[in-house]
Image (tube, rainbow, N blue to C red):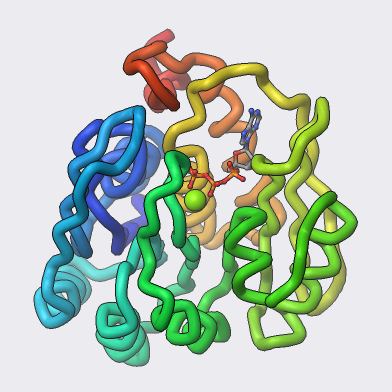
Length: 261
Ligand SMILES: Nc1ncnc2c1ncn2[C@@H]1O[C@H](COP(=O)(O)OP(=O)(O)OP(=O)(O)O)[C@@H](O)[C@H]1O
Ligand SMILES: [Mg+2]
């Protein structure tokens, strides 16, 4: 079975994050990637230089076209950008059965804002629709109104997000310090810590997009959430280790590492 993944996210001209990272990840992992583009960003490894949003009705129309014709086994939400787009996406998803992985993208690695302030509330309303929400530390802090300084704080905040209605949260630990990177998976049934050695590298552009898309492939195949997370982390670590070293800033990952090297 080839899991059909519908990716709703922004284009990253540098190819390291956003739609481009999502398509590479889904393809390498054996899924079929279709997309609804929410914005065209002018971006390289040093930062986001411009964002050109796509109209909400066009985002929704792309989704409907793909869903009606190709079908969908899992939906991956990345950069949505505005409350209007979030509302349009939520509206289409109301008629869809497939699981949703929601990567609540708010700020790019270089610091550029990718979500309007009034859209944070709209995003919170979308949480219960997602099988999994994958915030990084600043996103988890913004969604819960808490301060997160260590992984203990992150665990508590993830539990708070579940109490607020999320079905499952993967609190990513990339932004916290330490020799280990720890991601907490919190569900209504409990929690599990996924940890690995922190790789010393500047090439982490698109780690969040890659992880969420890899999880979406697993869920699209019908895997259990914990298995999908474990496999996605293993794929991501390989991609970080095999980064090609391009660019002067946060360079892209080596998405093809498991195929050709
Ligand atoms: N240096 C690193 N070594 C190993 N794993 C890492 C490293 N940096 C991030 N990760 C892993 O990458 C994933 C993404 O984490 P991160 O917290 O960086 O997300 P993000 O901020 O959303 O990423 P992005 O900036 O791409 O959106 C997590 O599974 C995290 O553990
Ligand atoms: Mg991210």
